[in-house]
Amino acid sequence: MELTVNARNVNLTPQLRTYVERKLGKFDGKLDNIMETRIEILEEPTRSALDRTVIRVNISGANITLHAEERAENILTAVDRAFDSINKQIEKQKGKWQEKDKGGETIRTESPEASPAANRNRIMQTIDMGIRPMSLSEALAEADIIKDEFFVFINSDSGENPSILRRRGDGKYDLIRTELE
Image (tube, rainbow, N blue to C red; front, side, top):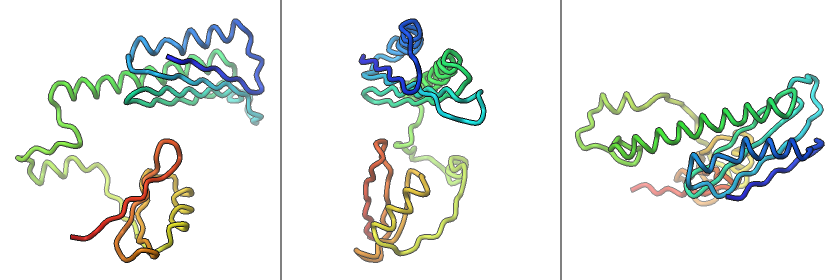
């Protein structure tokens, strides 16, 4: 596992660096597929002294990405909070994997005996949204503003069928073109 610690506007002493690496570098023992851990420590000029120190932790692996951003009055408190946050995410992810191993349903499988009542219980929220015609560049600009994972629009450049912009983890988009059958 590759561990990178970067500091901006912070005097990172060797003792402090050792504490950060020791505290946030031991997640590879909990998950065996972690390939990289990036830690960024910085101080921002804020009105409140209680949230000037910011720590960002990004953990990436073969099939997992975890992220935590914590603010505190000092580095040690921020590191402890980030550790707790990542720990919770790891436990949640392990629970998902265990359910999958036990034969629990995943989002990609659908049981043939699923009734309409069971389907209603799976839908947690209904959101009504208007879809309007716009060019691809207009849709990209609006998707950047909205910050949702998906943005649906009618591509005025290519026709009347709806298109979908899906935001990727790296900030770029996938364009999904639909066809009515």
